[in-house]
Image (cartoon, rainbow, N blue to C red):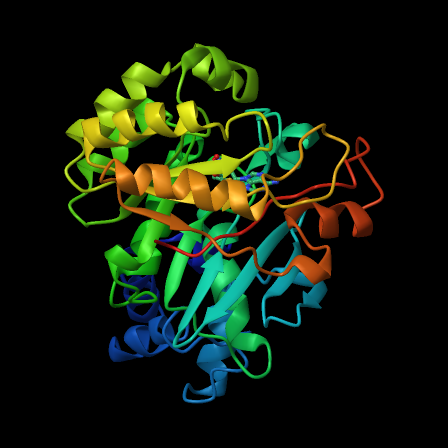
Length: 363
Ligand code: SAH
């Protein structure tokens, strides 16, 4: 008899999982329709274990558990803000911790997911960057940030997903690609592509890969400075992919892109920056999201004042650029993305305690 390594069903696309389950059902003489029954419990009606799939015969459940796995992310911490924002810290099998943030807004529930543990890009104001790169997440580790919310009580059902947690999603394309399928496919979570936003520093090969998909996933690009000289001081990746190349790519993108622009007091918030940013946004038809810097920190940046942000926005509007000022959410849970991780994880290199990944709603 051949022995198989158990297959992680949650790291497969819905179509692959169904095929694997059908083959398995056939091989043990179980009715093929049972495969679809199991598949429903992966994403549509998540079950925590095979044993919990009570619509299946007990013997079949036991056979499934020998052949397949349904890994869970361990919930290692949770904080709730007075504004309803909730942060979850998940621990992965190898002990790494990642953060996921749920942001309610009227009928919407936006989930901000992590795509990597740590990040290689070292943006000057971002504390996940200061942690350095630890590793890429597998597809199931990203998709299960959504799946796990079915098991909190009451269950949370996100309507929107933003890849604005820890990591650079377009530097982990194979896993993100697969995750997008799980999120969007009707046999997965069935979340509309226009409700799924990828945020990137402008990692050009990843933008090509995203463009190659037929679904209308949204693209947000972290611009943060309107000139190469300034941007290079904030985002080292600008040396590899300079502003002009990023803007040119955005202009060719088949959908409208969003610029993200974090407002750093006396750094990138002057009137002349607004004029330069307006020219860039106009050249590629971008919508601009102004992001208040999530405060707190020894990284040497201070948030722009509310007045300054309002004036900056007015300048952009005056130049006929569509602009929104993001609301800061979850401020009272001191809860910016790496903070929770830094509090709970006493291993690895010291992480900055002023971590401050603000999470954002999709535009
Ligand atoms: N790597 C991707 C996605 C993760 S970050 C990217 O850079 O776009 C999501 C957004 O949060 C980015 O625009 C990032 O620059 C921004 N961000 C990081 N630290 C922040 C902080 N302290 N305050 C506000 N926004 C921050």
